[in-house]
Image 1 (cartoon, chains in turn cyan, red):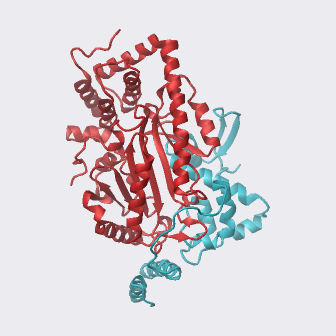
Image 2 (image 1 turned 120 degrees about the vertical axis):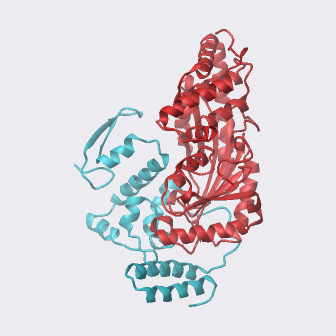
Image 3 (image 1 turned 180 degrees about the vertical axis):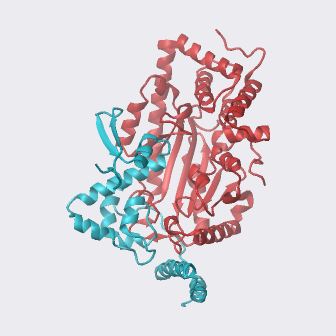
Length: 169
Length: 357
């Protein structure tokens, strides 16, 4: 049997008598630890977000469609949908646009609505386009450093500096 | 400034003053914000994190409001110093335990703090003693607007302020109150209250909790929804439910006084005696007993002790505060003994024996 929260083998079969009704869960050791030690509210919130997401995805989607979705990668920060689904955290502001279709039902689940009401920033020194470019360039620079291509990395760094100063590279 | 050199003994949130402060310990508002030009923390490598920390902290320190603040590079702080800031609620446990570049700008009077590289790039929070959202909200508006001039926030016309976790998107605002609800716990009504709060989308969690039960009967209530409501509406949502819970707690207290006054008196006096006389005592038991004593003071079952003193004891019997008082690092056993000595010195008075003991 697979763990209900991740894809590992379930090792703990827990019958929960504390709620209003009796329920059982099947979890791998790591998820069982989270489940049994709810002292860190953050962790619980994250796992409930993840389970909410996984339930929502199972509706009206085949396994193939899900597998294809998991491989979808944000061109700006490089996070895959699979990584988001596992961690419950997004990779960059652009994900809200790039994964819009998948996120919208989740956001409705959490907040009931999808439209922000409230204040807006008064200053926006960098254009939306440049913001995306900056995140993308930072990632490319990190990759260049990892590959020890320092010449490439320093060229990218100059482009980043120009963008930060509001110039076009 | 060193971490343990704050001018006040305890932060404003534990001062025990302000409206309804017998039940409402503190009010807090926090905002989650991200810098538009960086990936969220999850996709940051060490260099990105260091870059964010240095950029954001530099810009924060340029603000006029930073003149009354102290900046701590959390990554270089010792564990006991990080814990000290957690116990004063100036940083979250998550910021303390995270890895990599991170920091916090703290107001020396401890009315607000700005964390860098927590779950989001910025977490701005304002604290007030008692029930006082309006004042907290005004200050956080001021802080947010000032930071907005220096930092380009990640924002989406439809979704609002963008956050690493979709649960915070929109206003990025969490409004919370910390309540002391010992009578609802004693009368076993607390679960019922929680269930009804959850139905109206409010989150409840225990404070300082290491187990599932809230330590010292302190509970934090906050809004779950951050999108689709204005900041003012969120303040009103949490603000409107607090008086209801306060009235439940007061009713439960009156019920206890009428129905089982002697038993309550015995419990309260025993709690105080245990705190005065213990040879060693854990922080959990201390919280549990101090909660009873706090209830006893509010119901005039104890006369020669005041709320500010008990509030101070809640903070100073925590592990890091105790070690700072002693001036040395101690293990659990040493702490349990030092805690007992400290409590004895703070509570033991020749005439201080609780009545009817």
